[in-house]
Image 1 (cartoon, helix red, strand yellow):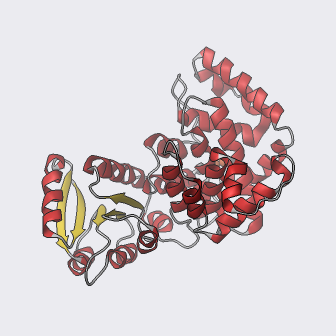
Image 2: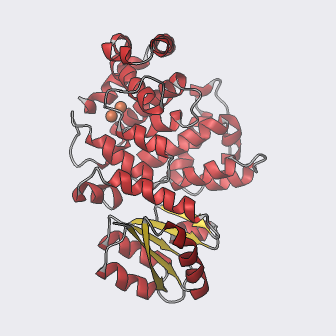
Image 3: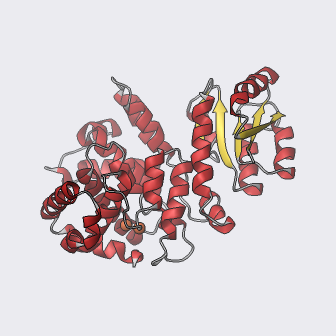
Length: 367
Ligand SMILES: [Fe+2]
Ligand SMILES: [Fe+2]
């Protein structure tokens, strides 16, 4: 059996070239093409697809309409955009998309991302899929974070364009300004613009803050604060346990995002891990992050350090404090690793003495 992709473009040459490039993936993918938005709508209504890959600017029925129709009629289909332009207009038009690629995109990469989505989806039933892709209260894909990360990865990024990205969302912008001028980060200072806030907070902090705000923005204030505190704490713990892994902080911040998509509080089942993992795959986070989120309530089985076991332990330390470090499950690791992680664990707990209790409360949803 192969996976099915619907490829949409108004330009027949572009379609032909995509199908041509797709030939080398024919063992695992079947490509169906639609020339223009109207043809795409008909195919979406009459057939099932794992991936929709659509152009945005098309005469008549636009890519935006194709995407929002797919959200309604085919919530299990991953919605990717392949566009010739990238600007602010596009972000609005593509608001129902999960991921955006610019032409000429590397088809291997596009299909790789889609496969990670399909694998994460396999753990869910159809109502859970709907809860993530079109459910009430599910956070939209963290678009500003993605744009910001791309901008900040340029070796000499331009502060004004970074500020413009943050300014796209009022809530995110408000929070950035608030935090930059708060005393939480040293002496209070006056911050008059987002540009100054970016300078004051620094590159890493601004990325983390924007990710958290985008994910938590729609939640009621009290819940949001508890979730945010717990997310940040686990992020810090995970990156202390595994500083060699670039994604450890992001995995920690995202690990409980599935709670935002559960219709009722998720107790012992760990379903929120599966939901969160699917969301992270849809949003294009790397596969190690996707896997670690899914497994963060499952006791580790490998002997060596990997992101999944670091995240599992970080979450346990945040929930249970020092007793997490006495857990016999830790002896499953290679003895040197057990020793190292115990040491790191005690050190980070010493640095966060007053956080232990908050963490406990925030994690109440876990047990
Ligand atoms: Fe959790
Ligand atoms: Fe957690």
